[in-house]
Length: 151
Image 1: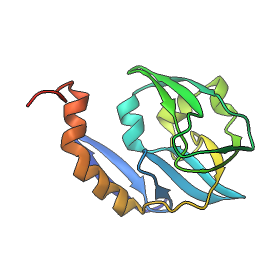
Image 2: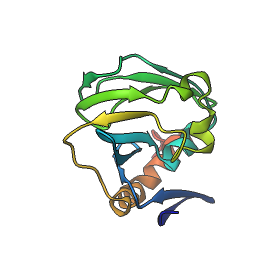
Image 3: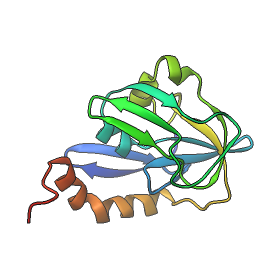
Image 4: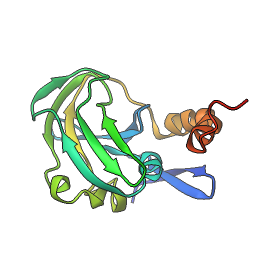
């Protein structure tokens, strides 16, 4: 098993394997055939809570821009738009998730991967990603608790 770096989200341990890289929009990227395999980090899965629906709005082999919507995910918390980690090309999707996205909840670093992605972008190391989370954690907690507009 790969080494991990742990970030404490309150009493929850969000784990980040060091055998992959990370994106500011809370995705992981692992080098694989033809590019990168992309999935949700423990941090994003914890915030989403209980994913039960996933739909892609682009086709395989589609070139995408950094902030282009590529699909939607529905969870116990909300319906959210999904975006790629950056500019590149989506090669193919994890078809198993379309019928049963529960692997996102239970095995997000394994069978719950989302898609293969070809890109020239640079990612963050696990350590850099955890440092980013630490910098933004207080703000994130306020947003989660609905206190973003309070002093």
